[in-house]
Every structure is written in structure tokens, then in C-alpha cells.
Image (tube, rainbow, N blue to C red; front, side, top):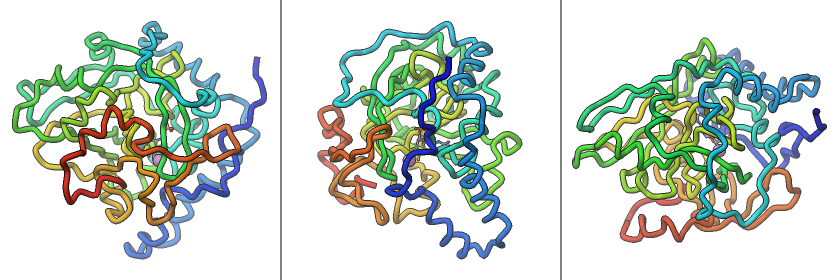
Amino acid sequence: MLIKIKKGWELPESSVTSESTFLNRRRLIKGLAAGPILAATAGLVSGCDGESTQTAQAASDDSVEQDPSAKLYPVQRNLRYRLDRDETSEELATTYNNYYEFGSSKNIWQKAQALSIRPWTVKIDGMVEAPMEIGIDDLLAKVPLEERVYRHRCVEAWSMAVPYSGFPLKALVDLARPLGSAKYLKMVTFQDDSVASGQKASWYPWPYVEGLTIEEATNELAFIATGLYGKPIPKQNGAPLRLAVPWKYGFKHVKGIVQFEFTDKRPVSFWEEIQSSEYGFWANVNPEVSHPRWSQASERVLGLDERVPTLLYNGYGEFVADLYSGMKGERLFI
Ligand SMILES: Nc1nc2c(c(=O)[nH]1)N[C@H]1C(S)=C(S)[C@@H](COP(=O)(O)O)O[C@H]1N2
Ligand SMILES: [Mo]
């Protein structure tokens, strides 16, 4: 039975500007012609496609049928991580997404279905004892799966709260056995512009890359999400595996990961490469440090009309504040 619920793209957008507003400026810098500009904004226009008949739920049910990991879920919830608010509805969390590989609007969930997630090989390499390539289902068999409800805070000042299933990133670090000289973990998204048309936009530095320090990657909160709402994670949310580091802004939560590389050089992430004055490496949530274009003091909770105050480290200070206590001269927030 289908229940009519407001689609993500029907939400009021007045308080939200896209992460990509910088593009007007960047296009000018790169001197690009109008053609690609129209292509990039076309997604926004077609985003008002209220006529679509299939729901995100139905699409995810389809992919569950073909997904060999479907039998692994649901998994036991870890009650150590608790919410101060209601869970966001599945309908909203799976239809209001940021995934620039599939376009710059929030309504990319249908386009993302084009991504094939089997076979899916993950490379674990760089400064490790034994580099490896491992299929996603073999990886899932080697790690402890659990469910965690996490808040998620986008730098565009909207937020949600969702039940991710997956495993602590530390389990993958332990599997990789990094050398003592490794200081950072770099994570890289797939690249295939035949399914992800956003990757045809040459002004972006594809593939999407993100990074953490090893200390952050082994913090108990750092999580690799492979499921959502007790099922395999939908493609639009980053299937078959994406990062969840809930004390950091959403752009750190890299989706569709194909490589984990251990390195002694601080990775330059996708958004940092585009505009380092606006997006830094640390990107910890802090209501007192504004992004140049958005105050971070409060957030619009998806599904609620009200704004709520934003919390330091997105409310996860008890787990992560110590990571940063000794650091001087670092731009820790955005
Ligand atoms: N590869 C990739 N990962 C990505 C993004 C992206 O565009 N590409 N967007 C990020 C941003 S800005 C946010 S807010 C979250 C959104 O995750 P969600 O769609 O599951 O809510 O994904 C992050 N991960
Ligand atoms: Mo975001």
C-alpha cells in the first residue's frame, strides 16, 4: 500500500541553498560556456517531477530482491547511541539526498538506481601490511554488523536522524593492518560517468574523495553504513557502503566507496579542492562557526517545520572532543 507522503523535493527550500552555489563563481573562473551550466541546473528543474509513479520505497524493495546482502538485515541495534529527537521517515531520508554524481538537486534517487552494486570490489591499500581487493559480500562476512541511530547534519543547515546498519570503521582498519607511518585514511567514491551523469561535469574534481586521521577513523563513532532502516542501504544513500561520522558535516560522509587508502599525506577532499576557503579537512559541527554562506547556529530538521539549535560536535562531544583537545592552529570547524 502506498501512502501519500510529501516528497523530499516538495519541502520548503527557502532556508536552504545548495552546496554548489559557488559554481557560478567557479564557472566564471574556468571560463566555461553556457552549455554545461544549463546541463547542471536541468536537474533542479526536473526535480519537480511530481508525476513519478514509483516510490523510493518500491525502488529499494526491488533492489533488495537482487541484493545478496538483504538476508543480513535487520541487525541488532547498539543502544549506546541515542537520539534526542524522532527518527526521520524512511520516505524522506531516501528521497532527499545529496549525491552530486547523479546531479546537484536533492531529487536524485531515481537516477541513482542506474548504479550497479554487484559485483563491487573494494581496494584497501597504501601504507598497509598487505594490500587487498575484496568483494563487498566477503567484506560483510568479516565485520561485526550492528544498527546505530545517528543524527546527520549537512552544512546547508538541514538535518535528519536515521538508523544505519553497518560496522565500525575500526574493524576495517584492523583488517587492513596499517603501517605505523600511516597517518590518514583516504576514501574514494566510484567513478563511471556512463551511469553517473554528474561526473560528466568536468569542473568537478572527480572522483569524490574524503579523508580522516587514523585517530578519527578508529574512534568508536566512525561507522561504515551498509544498511538503512533494517535493509541494505539504498543506492541514493551511498550503497553498498558509505561513511557515517556524525560529529562532522555531511559532506565528509563519502558514498559509494571503492577504495580505502592509508597514507601519510593529508587527503584533499572533493569540496576542499573546489573551495578550500569554505570547506576544510576537519569539518566538525560547531554552531558558533559560520560557513561563509550559512550560519550554523540552527538547523532545519527534515520533516519538522521548526528549526532547532545546532550542538557542538553535533551533540557527540563526549565521544570525540578529546581528539581535538591538543590541536593548535587548525581550522577544526568547517
Ligand atoms: N560520493 C558522494 N558522497 C557524498 C556526497 C556526494 O555528492 N557524493 N554528498 C555528501 C553530502 S553534502 C551529504 S549532506 C550527504 C548526504 O547523505 P544522504 O543523502 O544519505 O542524506 O552525503 C555526502 N556524501
Ligand atoms: Mo551536505
